[in-house]
Image 1 (cartoon, helix red, strand yellow):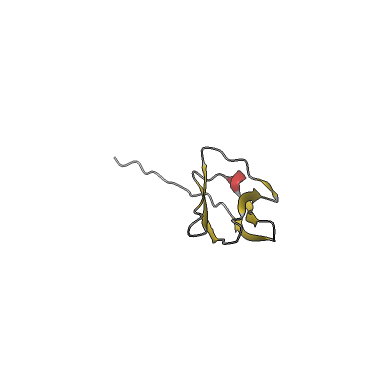
Image 2: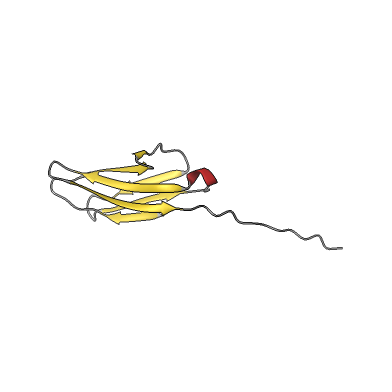
Length: 85
């Protein structure tokens, strides 16, 4: 999960990017922006190696823009099962 707080007047438009390109949302992605608190969040479910990369929250209004960036590494977990006699 990535979270940022963004406020501006007029209210900014918020976009999420991966590696500098517009993030293509799927059923594994969830992005929210609460205009009252300014809190933006992005959740990625069921992470895969292809999800690793640089994610950016980009906010812009007529006056300016701002970014918040996070580097996401996906580490595979190893699962072992033991057979007992």
